Length: 245
Image (cartoon, rainbow, N blue to C red):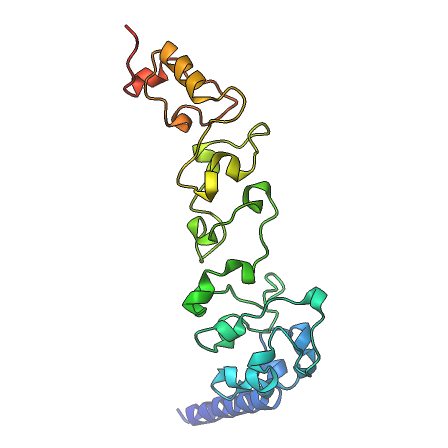
């Protein structure tokens, strides 16, 4: 029983030593990982960004990173070269919460992530629809000629998956990888037309379908979703079309 007070004293002394070491050498005692390259010079100065017991604060960040200069100038006021310039959007945030996206510690070697997923909810409402101000326009043939808002097909939680998958409606194979305006006139993607290419004239399409007994043929992609596969001859009848008999 007499040894218990001594044990508590030893435990208390150890805790005091640990707390003291955490204050004296925080980089060695409690650092979650090395700093990113831009902050390497602060590796032993944790309190440049952190406040005791309160963690990092946006106020500490803006003491070095002037809000108006983020993305445009370095912390020393040197303009960022145009070839590496990214459009600055930090001035369009609804609140200055740097830690919502940045940790600046590289973290465990297995992940090596110093930047957290960005939430578009942090942007002011008018900025959320200006996708191209931060994201370069996609270079694939599907998006190259689009002149519509990205939000028509993509959400602000993630670029993929998109809410619209063109292959589910019509497969854009090598013979049909045409500019969008070929089928969607005036960039109206709520409508499409198959007329105007090859033998696809209204009169010829009508004649060929009536010959097969198919009278419901206005919605082409209902039967012809994949141009490489011939639709069944009786498919139109199954959908309610009537034969000549």
